[in-house]
Length: 386
Image (cartoon, rainbow, N blue to C red; front, side):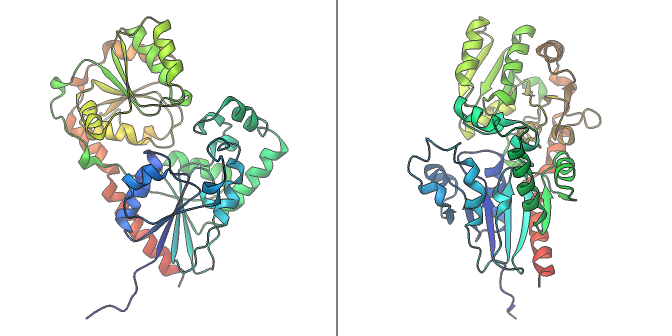
């Protein structure tokens, strides 16, 4: 007998889609759970989305079509809330916003259309004064945003952001770290569903003895990612490091290596393919994750999924994914200095870690778990709205 129950109509709303990152991985997992969903975003890189989201309906806001938008991108940032509110969600049962900034500002068209907010973090630039996290920020843009810090304008934006969060029907967060921020800044309770990690796709190296004698940094080369600290620590410890990734801070980091006369110690790989990524994760001595107060951190989990250990700064969401005890899947350094990290690098031995334990720990954050939980949550929220 056929069921007369119609499938749920789901929309996915995202911050800008530019390139591969944590947000994009969440969207891809949501599309596996809801393959007929339409994506709404303030703007997107069409060359990227054509490759990564083939056949997916993507609706961009008016920001996408503003002349010279690329040149004015950061100055237009404060128009994003209105861009998201301009979207119409007529006919949808559930809208899922994936947001670290303004995607949660959407306005469902009727009470029956439920809004699930998957919050990556409250916006860092006016809640935590971490302006550096706005990607691609120029010196002029930095001064522009600095003008808002600790002024009545910041208080006004905080009020608008808090009100937008409090209109969400169901608040979900990517980690307990973000859960604490949501409670502190929005005074809201939330449910934790960890960011999805493609554990099965990672190349598993079950023999620590076959790992090579170099450390890996993998991610954006940006000031706030701690790349400089990783480089200085490797030079102090006389241990080779490979830097995989690109970013606004690349030129400065290359100049730093020249200044330190460390070209034999530090190797820049730039952008790497998926195939090379798998090789790097499976061969490195350990992954270095020198990021402060990370929201969650998919990269360390990917390193564990490859059977390898992680060396991370003791803060943020990484404390929930990497274990120092049983199973031991990594170690933390407590002082955010090159000297503190260098001391660990000097004596680090990957053979102290069990690859199977690392892989098992990573499996707690597998994308299949995320998809299962999100499917159940969407159904529950939709049923409660009827």
